[in-house]
Length: 143
Image (cartoon, rainbow, N blue to C red):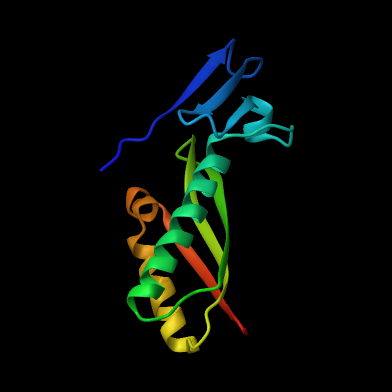
């Protein structure tokens, strides 16, 4: 299996500093600050990147699981929301909510939901985040 990497550079104090996050492939580099993480300033933050990774991972796992069940998805769109809250005085990712819509010809709603739940539990990012509550709303879109 592959090992993937990313890096962060931070300069300054917590609230007045700034940094950049960069993935090794060069496909993404973004600026982040205390304000972009804990307030509403423009920029990225680690939780947003975790949400993006989870949405991408789930979509691929769902596609693969649908294929194993004999279905060929035409389109899967997933949105992930990572919730950051204080737990025992420390910022903690407490929940990730996945919302997915997929067009899967020939699928029935019961099989669709069962496969979606399996992908939610089995994708590598979900497994890495086992200590976080992960919820899912899955919608089968008519072809």
